[in-house]
Image (cartoon, rainbow, N blue to C red; front, side, top):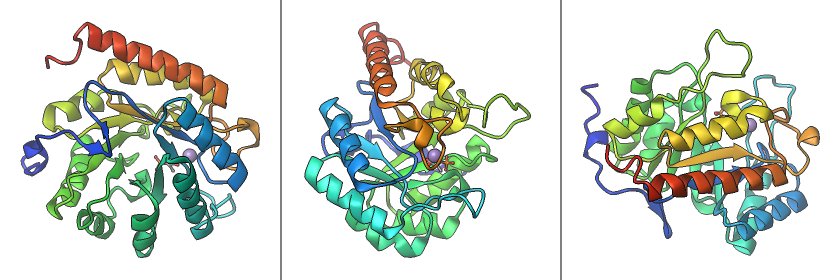
Length: 273
Ligand code: PEP
Ligand code: MN
């Protein structure tokens, strides 16, 4: 991995406002796959905030496999996010799918997500490199760890060091899950760079019954955080309903994850390698 020139030089952990992505902390990002309507999203943000979750995810522009599936609310959705952010103070994570929308994202969101399908959209990566917005860079489902790291290197080359790597599963021959969660990418990335790495068990598994196990495994493997799809009524979700947790299930899981993280820290597990 000779070309990981800037990645290996990063020294400081990423901090967004007062939240640091380091080993002391487990940063959980939760929320629905897509923005569906204002009221339910506002309620979600309020609930998350009340329970100590600082970041909410929700897609405005949805890259769907089928053109006939729900495509998201677009700019109207981004405006809802901005309004909810202002009212609740929750921090917003949402995916960009088109470089021409960048000015809106710079105004409205806290972390710009680059989805699996855009991990090697190099003009987008270069444009994001010229901003100082935190970027959540998902692994492409057909990409190696090296290709993913080189995508981060594109962003770094523009001067932006605020990057979160997000493992979301890769395609394999296995059909029991939507993708195969490559948990080994967590320690590998941590060996190579100080960039934080988080895990998205929702898109990896594609089924809600596996989210708890995969999330706990991610924390045990040293992930700095998780990105989890949560919906007030998963069965009615307009996208990715099979993988969304209900709000109570999610809050219970979050307690377990924070408990596991505290245990690891109290026993000094992970901090020595
Ligand atoms: C998402 O987070 O909603 C999403 C589309 O994820 P991915 O790019 O990993 O498929
Ligand atoms: Mn989704």
